[in-house]
Length: 542
Image 1 (tube, rainbow, N blue to C red):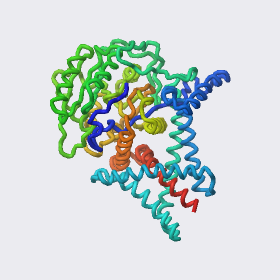
Image 2: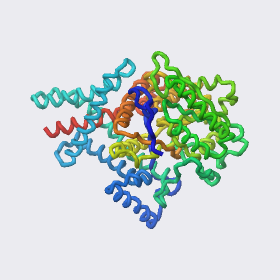
Image 3: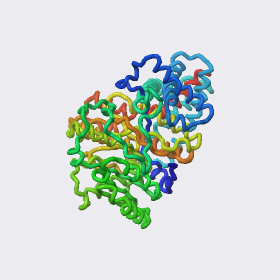
Image 4: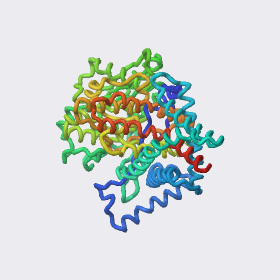
């Protein structure tokens, strides 16, 4: 289904544009299922999808690449790793080669984009959100000073840039290398190595109810120990799943499509609760839309209702503020009879299509250790439901962006960051203080995972942010302008790097360094990497 973005996704920069930080996809090699130990004949069979995807790219068949992903995974790994290697080469052994020119040209393109991010951010600057502008200004200021110094013959003007680059290049390289490796590594989780086809099919309304009885044990990052058998019917009868859909001026057809996909899941009538999180600024039309959806779907779920958020002073219009109100109102509703410890809450965008296998695996982890599950934030991998329908520029940007995100989420440790869709026990929502409704919470998914991690770590509890290697599907932006606006939100999320420093006190030196690196390194690489590459190329060329 091609997404028709509602007015709410464009009404202002800090508003509702494509809720949350963004999304990630996943691709890698499934070691547990024999990813590394296959006979030569099997390996030869796997080369065919790669060759086909290569031809597909040349002929513009983006649909094939979006569905099969193998070529995308390969290119993301190669480009990230080669880019990191070239960065080191240009910095430590300066010689002019054609490859330097390519990197230079790429740096100009990315630098222009980052410069626009800085300009936009400064025009929108508030005290809580000055960090991205400062980071961008530092990168461009030192680079500009170095360029001017070379031109006018003042070598000392390059010293600030060399200091910044000396710190940034290793971090950018580490992020690029780990991202490339993680992207390749996660490929096998979603792809069948024998056929090159996805393991999971995108659910559609009125589609068949999937058979979950033959599924293997869940595969997660980091690895979570689970019982050999899936949860019994007694557990399923005692527990519920709550799906929260924050939305603003989305069409009834889009919301209905998302709910009809949930209707294809087993036990939805007895276990699924749905909360439509509406905005008061949508007016009477929003309330009528919510009531009509409740009437239409009431018999298909065990509970459905809606909340209404009214924007308060200092709140940022968007997903975080809406969720902060929605879950508070839910827990005050007399007709919601379920205990917080018996409910898993899944936050999703209005266009998210969730696989039944994801809910099944969440139940499996939950049943295996309920005390441990109370300190888990779980999330699925993201795929695009309409990448073949997006403009070519959005398509390329989206595929590369999702590849890098997949690599970042395959990193070491227990802290990683969901994108758009994630699940946690309703009791955890209460314990961490719901959502941050202000500007500091603009990346509500990234920020909420970081807040939860720090909250439980300070209590000495074993908190993990877990990637469940099952997909959900959401739509790519319909226009290049929409994609560009979404990337601005990602850039503004850089303030979480400072949040991780300010709020990790008391964790111990090593734990604190780990948290700060996990939160700051991807943002730092995105900000400083292209600029430093451009500056290094200029200095070496001079």
